[in-house]
Image (tube, rainbow, N blue to C red):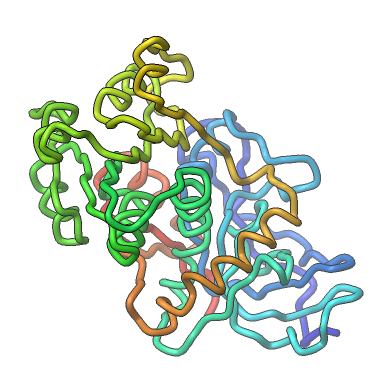
Length: 335
């Protein structure tokens, strides 16, 4: 089942590994949804750090995924593959996808889609899936976050950092964030952080332990790794959990294992893109039950930075890599 579809569409492709200038506006055939898939007419697409890594040649898409960047979209379901409920056609959704979001049409799976409620703009909807899926799985499922606990979030003004701050506060946690300037610290404070630390001028271990009366945080959400790993463990209290979601500071760390064992600390980490469709569907189902009511009520909204047109994808990547953004960058693709 389909609406009237064009044969071709505009996309942003990676012409070769490199900087933002390798992103090229091209024309491609509109993809056809397979069994259990839907085709979404894209309204907006989120821009994420993994898109930049893929463009640079260091984060190849998983087998079978589109070679186009773009891991989250909002739009309208325009066509259905075999076996999909006919009621899906015409729905306004946001979706986590394996790639292909930088295009006028994108393949998604209905179980990875969430409905766009009234009051949520399509730009905001496109800014939610990647960060929400990532934060929920890592902070609440892998990190066992509980109300009343203190969490230290690195990169407080990033898309992940702002979503983690908002979710943690909504679920009754105390939030400490780090940022690289006083201006960003002020922005993070505005998002809801209880304590903000300028990591360039302050020691986040010392500040975290002082803020918690020497006990340390119960949870750290880290995207740095490298030499941050031991410092994160030092900022944690006994039975603390360190969750790593990226390694911007390098993939190798030196850890005092004896100290970690004595303090019963845990290190875990994950990536999301290569996980199975079944896993992502189960995650989306839990988010629909536990978090989506907060989106529907207006209590949870993404922090929005800047919106670029599809043809300005290179500018969007340049802004992300400059590190000056606060919250989410999105591309306006369709209506």
